[in-house]
Amino acid sequence: MESRSRPVALSPDDAAALAARHGLRKLGARPRLRPYIVSLWQRRDFTWVLATSDAYGKNQGSYLGQLWGVLKPLLQVAVFYVVFGIVIRGARQGIEDFLSYLVIGTFLFEFIASGLNNGGRAIASKVKLVRALEFPRAVLPISVTLTELVMMWPAMVIMVVIVLIKGHRPSWTWLELIPAVVLIYLFVLGCGFFLARIVSATPDLGNLVPIVTQLARYVAGVFFSLEVLAANLGVLGKLAIYEPFAVYLTLARSAILTEVKAGWLEWSLGVGYSLVVLVFGFIYFWLAEARYGKD
Amino acid sequence: MARIDEIDFSMDEAAFDGLPPAGRRGAGHDGSGLGSPTMVVDHVHVRYRVFGGKRLGASTGYRPSLYRRLFERTSSAVGAVSEIHAVRGVSFVAHEGESIGIVGRNGAGKSTLLRAMAGLMPYSAGAVYAVGQCALLGVNAALLATLTGDRNIMLGGLALGLTRAEVRQRFDAIVDFAGIREFVHLPMNAYSSGMASRLRFAISTARVPDILMIDEALATGDAEFQRRSRDKIMEVKDQAGTVFLVSHSAKAVQAMCERAIWLEKGELVMDGPCAEVLEAYRLGVAPGDGAAGPGAS
Image (cartoon, rainbow over all chains, first blue to last red; front, top):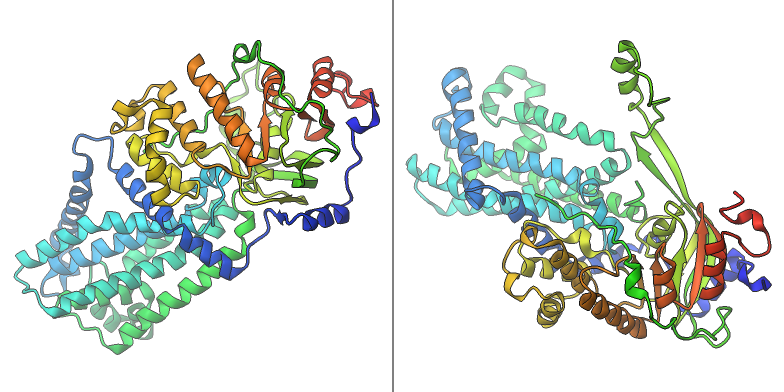
């Protein structure tokens, strides 16, 4: 057998030189930030179709199909109303229209919670896709949080219907709901970037995300008035009012309910939280771009 | 929501009977008479972690005590992380117009190497350099069983990096190739397995990459489809420049490739003209030193 059957491998330097001579690019190297963002933008159709397909797929396979998109949030409100409106009547303290207050808080918080949970599993749940195709991995956190946003729309419609039934008259301030939801989405996406990287490196932490959102659910004033809570807690109460989850719920409620007020402080906090978390989350995610799919 | 698992297609050896061996047999693999390099693989190592894989001790033949059953089984799954060193220092250079078969037994690291070469599985040491777009025939992972065929075509096409307009333009060709015209509006989980794999193949090859990598994705469906898919691969190969085919079927490699690489336990045993490598692989003896062959190890 001739000797070329087991050719002597090139040295790393020679290999790199050969590659450079013929214009080959190194695989598995992290792209620079700007080309990365450009390639992410080029994949926007994929991101969107993946998000809507996932949203559609989640409600398939039952007799009522997509109707569950509406039924699930309705049933959820019923449960919360029974518990916090009827069983534990103390929760209603200081709130004029408890049902509307509860509906807005519940639906938006459910979006935040499921966005964080699924954002954290963005890489882990789609690792097959990561190992099969080449695309900027930031597509995945964006797509799974978009899925939650898409699935939230039926809940938003129900929310408006309930508020109308409760006698709130539509006004221009209702439009503030749109920037509020956009800010919430960007915040969730930023957290999603952070969590996706952390959970893909250490899957164990994925189990902690629901615990943390559970805690947030009980302190963010989803089903009680934060002002009443803050009055009882002093300095800690101030913190409870201005933490991100509470701020976002206040912004959304102030758009529709006249009894909740949000001034420039709440809005600038909302914008600040979103931008800071989004920018740092994205960069943190991008830094590990070449490592996703290893486990 | 059921995600379609990537199917490990098995090669139907009969499909390759009577085929003439792949062309270009005379061309050397050492650079003479070949195009410029399309891929340089330099001492690549791939290690990955597997969770929950700690050894359970002797598991057959005897019934452990209640204590052992209650506690040790659980504790064996706590902090159980195994590292698998699947590819150990593989190096080679691929050129334009080459089709290279990667042979080796199950677990030899063939598929892992292919994924590392496609830039999909991070490698822990070494380097891979490649020209342009690499594509592994593995769009399966992007498809959703609950979605209709037409929606999956859009999703899979976009996943491959096509634009919406490009997918629409290729839509009819994909549907006809897969032969699912009357079922295209049904969810994919209503398809027969033959229809589903034809559709996956059709979507996978909708885009012609510079380097095509195939992980035993041939030989799905009936003979007619096998002929069409082989034509498709030849067509892709002619445009792509370089084709890699992973298989443990020597016949498939012989029919498609003029060069072969033999992997054993993550190491490159032999790299050379297809016929020579396959002959050595069949006999289980590597040239030069017999120690590297599977028969001796």
